[in-house]
Amino acid sequence: AFADYFDPVYALMRHLLGQTASEMLPLRARAMECVGLMCLAVGRDRCSHVLQEVVHVAMAGLPLDAPELREYTFGFFGQVAELLGEEAAPLVPPLLPFLVKAVEQEEVTEFSEHEQARILAKLGPDPDGDGDELLDDDDDDEEDEEGEEGGDGPGIHTAMLDEKAAAIHCLGACAAYGGASFAPHIEAVMGPLLGCADHFHEDVRGALARTLSHLVKACAAAEPPQPWVKGEAPASSKLGKATRWLLQRSWRTLVSTFKDDDDKDTVAAAAESISEIVLLLGPSVLANAPWHPASTDPLVNGALALLEQRHSCQEAAQDLSEGGGVDEEEDHDEAVWEAVSELLTTLPKALGERWTPHLERLLPALLPYLREAHPLSDHALAIGILAEGLNHVEASGRHHLPTILPHAARCASAPDPTCRQNGVFCLGVLGAHGGEAALAQMQPILSALQQRLSAQEEDEAVVRDN
Image 1 (cartoon, one colour):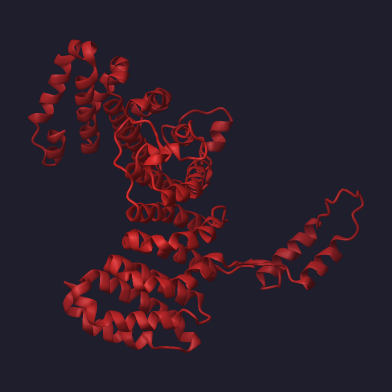
Image 2 (cartoon, one colour; image 1 turned 120 degrees about the vertical axis):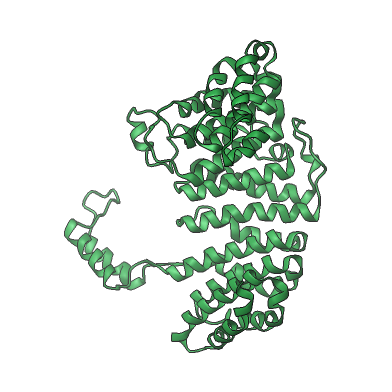
């Protein structure tokens, strides 16, 4: 629908893209963002006549002393990568030095020598000789006031911080959409990227977590791994040399971020990236992990911490440390729970029966989410994870049927369609792999399924499919 308006709107943006006065550069930055979104909206064929001109203007703006302009220009090139795919490969070499520089730059200003001398003079001699020289409260307040008034103390260049996050996102987009064509650049960017693993700002850490999975995909596209089979023994020999090199450098960062980061969105990003890598490369990923052979344990430990609400990214962690339990009233962050669900349903797809001991550990932490006091979204999460795990461990999980069947039957008749869908799937899994115990309970299982087959709700089609 926007295609008819593309040319007149672009004419307006074109005027802004040509601005060079410093006070106009923020407007030029927003115009760059707008043009990128416009191109994505109408597609490559409709915007091809302006792409060369816009790319030229975008590259010309990168050397300017304008972090905000570079931030939105990096966003534009990420959109161009999505638009052109591997055909954007010729743009990467001239763009890469600006991206790496932005990733490596320091956005925190240091104390000047004058400021250091002034603070040391205020501290005076250390009477105890223990090195614990502290400003008194009055001096501390004075320092805060001076900082707010623009003194020469330490500070953060937020524009450079945003530029850094945008550069990391752009690298991820170039890898995600460029595929094998980006593989030759991976080694050059890994050092700068991993230098951001412990960055103080969550936007940077989250961008890194997402980008690492895109780099692995690009590497695997350049040297395709051998096909993997569910439940096979992990073997790093099935992966190419470059892929093994990349995993050795990125896997620990992703798992540590998932286990220990204090920001929910960053934890979710790491979980999503881990899931994508496992689904792409299979069990061999775990063989190549730095802590093989128990490489699945850190992932399960992180998931358990989230389920038990004692993860560092959860506000309830402090309450639990003082003797609480799983808070049924806790407002669960949707992004985190979706990512945890994806991870705990992806790992059994790769590990098969080898997932059995991990399922045993997770079951006690998942059952509380099936209590009636919990919201239906929690029921859907828990029964979905259990169903997927039981489906892939097959007969190894049949002894859990008496425990899980009542919950599955209740979820199958829940008012929430996702909960019904997962509950019906779980009933099918229990019937398929439950052995003699399932045969003994076949009548109640079939009765619960019959209710769904005869239901007339509009959103019931996917439930009937299950």
